[in-house]
Image (cartoon, rainbow, N blue to C red; front, side):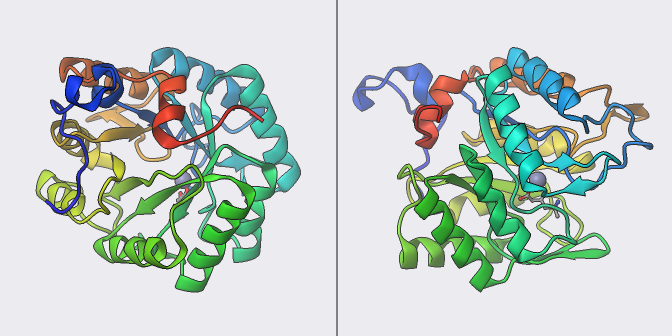
Length: 296
Ligand code: KMH
Ligand code: ZN
């Protein structure tokens, strides 16, 4: 292993920090995404009210971060800046969650619109570290866009989460940090997005290999798309990582049983984290971990 991500049992007196800080599990919920269709998935939160309601339920169930995509009045994905700004305000008003806006958007969104997302002044944002085939589509993230977006996060004081869909993205993350320094907040946190058709597979062996290639000192969460949800969740907990769950990634709770809402996905993650003796961490603890400063 080339990184020094703390192992589940590594916390304690030697670090001088309470054991709970290092051993707890950060749960991020990604409630909506840009891909699922409201008519096919009625439980998907697409209005501001639905989003805030689900965010409150997910906080109560154990989430500390919300990864946000929004929809327009027709439930289509949008990066409309005024809607994004209202969404950040409403989530801050209604919850204590760290508000992380997606800069990935939908595969059809322009680079300019994706850069402009930061104007909504979120606590954090996603920052995908490379292009990837995305089912039948392509999710475009060329180097100049990655570099510009990272510079903007540093200028505006937004904490990025580095989204890694494949191994080449990890190499690009190393290049980014070497050339442009640490992110705002001073801490590197990554999210392994596994099981996307076109990206790395979602299984324990791949997760272990990916984690071993992360930058020294980085923390990480993992999410498995679709049927890779559970294998990735168990592997991440075993390897000392954090979790992302939600209807952006998972629409089937068990074979033949659709997800009824985001909270049940967070509840399941929190239950498994508790069984692993790595209980979910509250938002204040997550802010300290990620280097997210106080509310604006
Ligand atoms: N909707 C995907 C094309 C992100 O939020 O940063 C991209 C995505 C990643 O969901
Ligand atoms: Zn997303």
